[in-house]
Image 1 (cartoon, one colour):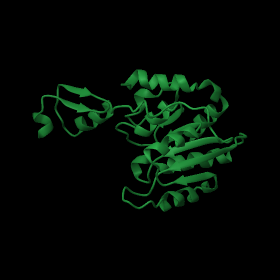
Image 2: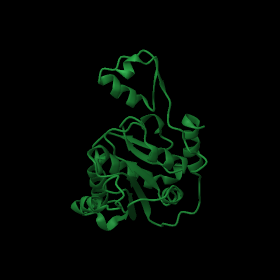
Image 3: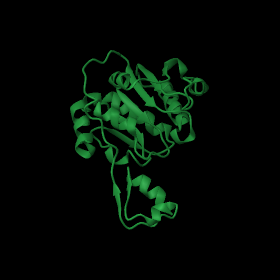
Image 4: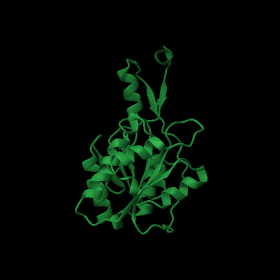
Amino acid sequence: QAFNQANKVAFVSMRQAQFFFTLGLQLEKFWIIPNLLQQNKFVLTNNKKNKEFSIGIVAYPLWVKDMDTFFKSIQLLSQSNNEINFKVFVLGKDNFTASKSNENIRNMAKSYQVDSFCTFISELSRNEIQEFYHQLDVLVSTSIFETYGIAVREALLSGIPVIATDSGGVSSIIDNCNGFLVPIKSPEAITDAILEINKNKNNYLPSKIRDFVIEKEGE
């Protein structure tokens, strides 16, 4: 009722607006106002420490994040004939309580027999998360529905290419210069995109990746 009585409503993405319209919201005028990018807190670096090709994900084990698809893609990667020396960094915990448990995430990785490739991190401070992105060669997002996509944008600001599902809030900021947009629930497409970025990683210029998202949504 409050929405329908409003003169205008602001949404963080077109996908979020479309979701409310499917619920029957009738509105002729609305704004799309993305969340404010913290572009000064996420910068470029040349200090990557890992020799292995490093894959990251920031998620929690709820259906909307579809971590099964992520771990299945890692399983396919480990079984591929391509010679790729890789490791996986999984940032997330089982829920939003004070507990730092990530046992459910670990068990999910074990069920796909890929836990040996993974380093599990429950949580990081805002200062530490910058270092997390700097250790990656690619960030993966497997969300089924995403209203905005903070982690994706933080990775792009850090100059890291992204592989993301076409889940809404990130669709407008993924381009050929900064990664791949893949179908939802397609581990095969994610694996193929990982291999492609590993093969052509010199084509993904950190400065260009960062500039693209700032030009789109910067302060």
